[in-house]
Length: 405
View (tube, rainbow, N blue to C red):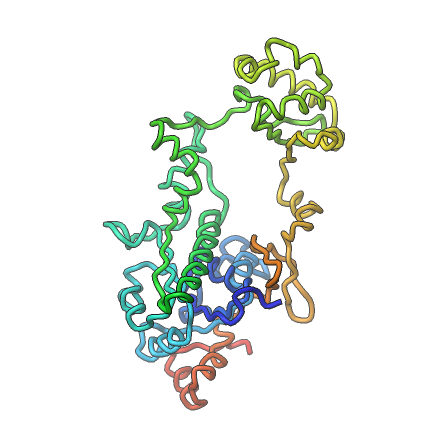
């Protein structure tokens, strides 16, 4: 169960989340991913302390770095850059989210690298793109994906404060887009024999995420307002609270198709002839009152009771509004492959799966995230370095090994 990318060699120069997420997806899919870290380590290793204080593990870092091999290089030294060059010479893919100026200073800019390695797929993740006055600007996903793209604005209630995004939302979706781009470029290389640059940005990913809204702005010159449950024009597309306080969402997107099943479920068959509610237009004009009536009805039963009623109507689409704990205990999430067991010493650790499966080339996680420099010596040996050369690189500090081994 090596995955569809078995035999593909990836060098990742990634920090924090977006670059490592792309490399992590490729590693899940079977690629051999060498994670090149600075001597002090990927700063993502600090999540353990930033988020948990004295927590004994780093699940955020584990998520995006499982199954990789780590080598720690000082790329400001000639020896460190020489090792990097040898890694790239053997690689199929280079993934990085280091800022463009830093890559330029290291001689790892896309023009230089692709000129030296014609078959290499060079995948660059930036904040704002690879061209323009701000191409080299730094941006975490809260800036490029969330704030500047328009997502935060569209989710802000008039007069209210912009909402905060959850950690890594933009980084993970950008990582997935990068992995898809890498696979497309590898497919093209199979036809042409030539690699190419794959570029994506947090800004572009954010805009694509809200392209439903942006398409309306471009086509009609309008901006859709954020939904409010008390004035939804289609009350069958709204959230409600059951009698036990648990919330759920009705997803009756198609008014004519989904209205009758809802009417049957709530026991109001007369609404099918009621002039206020019989048509989509009538429901839109009388939405506020209909929401109030539905609120009263849904308060009469627990969510478990409503779930049994809803599930008897195949054309009534709905979902419970779940907490993270609810999701992790949801049997359908498990059945959908949402969790994986990652080899961890003599046992396994349960982690979230990356979101794509393959029927003929199934993937399985290969192991936990590497310790900093855990594979430095192993990788150097694979590059043909002798024991004396390896010891010299470690002694000069151009390479860092794993002090815990």
